[in-house]
Structures are given as C-alpha cells and as structure tokens.
Length: 551
Image 1 (tube, rainbow, N blue to C red):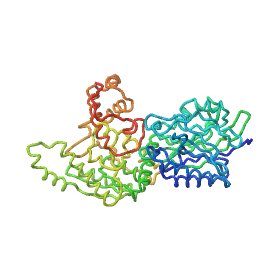
Image 2 (cartoon, rainbow, N blue to C red; image 1 turned 135 degrees about the vertical axis):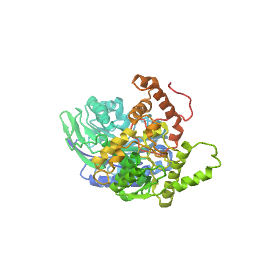
Image 3 (tube, rainbow, N blue to C red; image 1 turned 90 degrees about the vertical axis):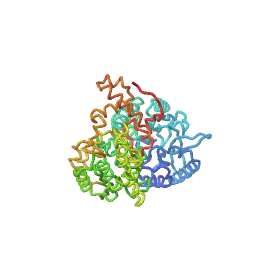
Image 4 (cartoon, rainbow, N blue to C red; image 1 turned 45 degrees about the vertical axis):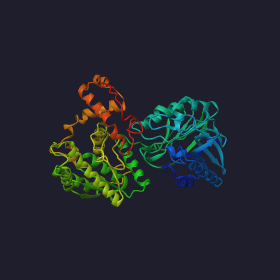
C-alpha cells in the first residue's frame, strides 16, 4: 500500500479519427510524465471526441483495439501507467470506456454508465450504457473512474464510494458553453466530492472539433470541496499533481490554481481556437473573407488573424455603387491594423452585366430586394472563385441575430465553409470587438493594440445594398432584437410570455414569424462554433415546414 501518488493530468487536443497521431501524442505526454505513477487522458482520447457516426465504422473499432494494445505494450518500460479513453466492444455492444494500461498490458476496463442524450449529445444512438462501475485497484489504491456524464448524476459516484473508491478520476469531453466552467466546478464536481467525501480529478480535453470547442480548464477538488488544482483554459497542459494519504483519506496537495478567462475573453478564445483547429485539421492554407467596412467582417478578420496569423488571412473589399467612402477607408484601415492582405475588387461591372442580362425578364418590375441580393451573390461568387483558384477557405461573417431572422442572402453572404459568428448575437459581436481592441488573447497570433477602427464600432450597421440603408430600416434596434431572440431561441418563450416581460406584442409576432420563416436558410448555413446552449443545428432542431406560431 502506498501513501503518496503522482498523477499527471494530460489536458490535450486530439484529432477525431487520427488514432496513430493521438496515440503518438499520448506516448509523448507519457515521456514527459516519466516521474509520475499514473497519467490520465481525456474521454475517448484515442479516437477523438466526439466521433459521431464514425464510431459505427468496424475498421475504426479494429484499429482502436490495435492501437490500444500498442499503448499497453509501451507501459512495460519505465514510466507511468496510462488511463486511456477509447471505444470497446463487449458481447456485441459498443461502449464508451477507459482502460488502465500498466506493466505492458490492459489491466482493467470500465465503461461509461450515464449516456448523455440532449443538446449536442446523442450517445444513446451510438453506445450501450455500461453497468454501474466498480473501482480499479492501482498500486493498492481504489480508484473510481466515472466518465464525463457519470458525474452529472449522483448515483455513479455514490456507487463507487460504496464499493470502496478512495479517489475519483473523471475523464471528460465537455464542450465549452458560456459559464460552463463555473457549473462544472460549483454545480457538479464539488457536489460529488462533498457527497462522497472523496477527492475528484476532472480532466477535460482542449481544442476544436467542427462546431464544438473544448476549453480544457481541468481541475482537482478535494473531499471537502476545496479547489486544489486548476489548469488553464484554452491551452494544452501536462500537469503533475501530488496526492497524499491522510487519516481522513486521500487529498490532492495544493498546486497551481490558474485564473480562467472571463467574459467576453472566453467567447473570443472559443472562436479563435475553433477556427484554428477547423482550418488546420481540414488542411486549408488559410482563409479568405469579404471585408466590408462593417463590424461583423472586421471582427471575423481579427479572429482569423489571431487564429492563423496575418499571413494566412486574405481580406477582399468588393465595393458597389452603394459602398460609402467611409466603408472603403474603414476596411483598408482594419486590414492595415491586422497586418493582413487586403485587395479591392469592384463588383459594379458584374452588377451591370446581370442587370442587362435580366432586363427583359424583369421588364415592368420595380427594383426590390432581388437586386440587393444579386449584389450579395456576386460577392459570394467572387470570393468562392478566389477560394477555388488559390485554396483558402471562405469565411462567412453573419451573426446570430441576422441568421435568426433571415437577414442574410442565401447563396450570397451565407456562402462559405465556416462562420465564426454563427452563435454570437450582434450585441456579443460589439462586446468582443471592444474587448479585442484593448486586449490581445493569450492564444492569439495577431498584433497587440486596437485592430478595429473606432468608426466601425460607432457607425450604424448597414448592408449597403441600397442608398442610405441601415439595419434598423428592416429590424428593431439590436438592443431590442437581441433580448427578444434570447427569449424566443435560448429560452423557448412564447409571444405572450415575452409580452409580459414588457416587449411590444406586434414586434414579437413579427420577429417570431421571421424566426420560423428563416429555418430553411439556417439549414443551408455553414458550420460555426457553438457558444451557448441553444445553437442553431446541434442544439435547436426545428422542422423547416411547420405551421405553429405561439400567437
């Protein structure tokens, strides 16, 4: 029986489907943790999380088993045992689980008991739940291994405690959401630790995976609920923790307690990390985007520069007859501040050509939004041509307020491969823009100092598709619109409920109608990072065709 343990927490990025790469990264981490007794990796770290339906590929399951055996064999050499998350098959059933690899073999396997089936999670359709797990004996110490969702319910940790667990180690794949770091510690982990009187190590992955991003922020709480260790968010870290057996049981010694990113820095970091991993994992050389002189494209350019570096970001201004000189100047100044490439490609020749081409068909019809949308689609075609010819991925720049009510042109400004602002309302866009002008993110590759001209932050938002156009010509002020959308989208409130909150009923009816009408556009929108708990696509899944209105 030992009285001290050294447990290394490997807060790592991972690549879904790159089993050999993930295994190599784990072996490199093990080498760095050579003085530890045990190194722990995040949930499904071998295959990458979330694997979605890739997990149903028999070849992937076979390769995962083979790579796990190679990792197990590596533990025959000096260095720590490994606690590795992977996929397992038992009696024909697929399980999300962990394996303890020690002394050259697979010493123990435990399966996840509670499978999440809400929001972004649909593990019930992929995995079978394992039985309530029992502790693993390691160096004479009883270690309970609840996996991610297992600690969001009290039964698993209580069961482990009843069967003699002395330490709880919880591997996770917990995606970022606003305020979730506080919820994990105060609303979940501390409750389990105090309830069982056992210390709990919470290990999360870091990095982006399609529309999800993982913030890391791993930690250890002791059995009295006290925070012993806090890893940084938005950063890969390999941290050794020291554990001591006391008369009251095992405790984790006090270690570094990092300060986590506050609002809106955390939102900005989520956007940066998600974009970086999406571009790099999909092997794009960089990104191209339309820089209009407005705030949405300006902050997207800043996010891209912080994610990829200025040399991988290409901004294109595409003026029409309605583009103001102020917008031309603001776009050029924004690109200068960011240090990225900036080209100007006027679209008026293409607009005129379309006008001539359609003149006979449009004869007798007044100009309307059709002509406005043609401009947007010409810009989309132009940017896609640059993407096709030179290889960078096209970024779209529409915010969640616009996407909620359909204030976007399908096959126009919606065209592209990824949207950093997909889950950010307009007021959030202003907040992160002001923050970025005064701060450079720790994980950013962009310049210090202001990156968005003041005029972009202060001028009224406009699509500039007709003379003197303002967003408020078509929509309520964003100070009114965004709270309404929060009620309708994030909280699923009815028109009557929001009217009781003080909003104008006629405006509410119109906005609800626009919200439902735009569903067909949102289904065709590019992916973008999830920030809240009701993003369009993974969380909020509405039918395109339906007749329901709450008023």
